[in-house]
Length: 148
Image 1 (cartoon, rainbow, N blue to C red):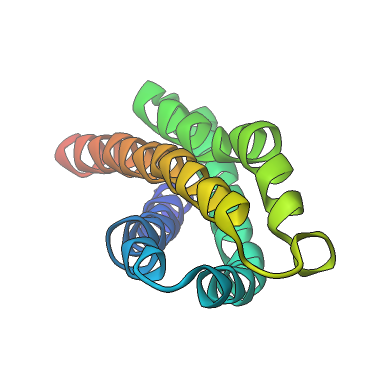
Image 2: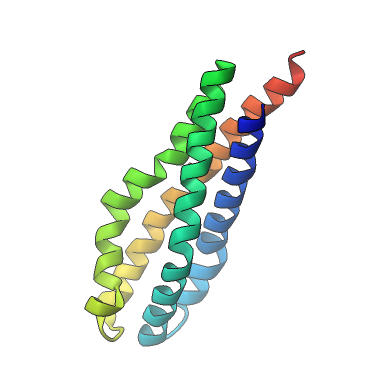
């Protein structure tokens, strides 16, 4: 149960951060002029990358280990949902992230604005994966404490 509890707590942290970005930070960012919008995204991305990537990894692996040890499909599904953030990010978001990086993007313009709008819609998927993973891990946890 310890792996499951850790996975649930870490998944909750990931999901809270992802939802904050989706519901608060990114909409506020989009209200800025194009150059400050891009600069703010670049600074935020640099800080969020190690935190969110490690939280998704720890929650995912923790869910898989807990599911294997406890033979719990909910925990395995939760771990898979959390780990799904990695291939999704690499395939869908990384190409945009690279185009928005300071070395390539230069000054903010209409093109970077369009890329940031697209980035926000894709980041919503990460938030949904976090919500799904957290809910599945919570189901596994509640099932585990209800079973003697």
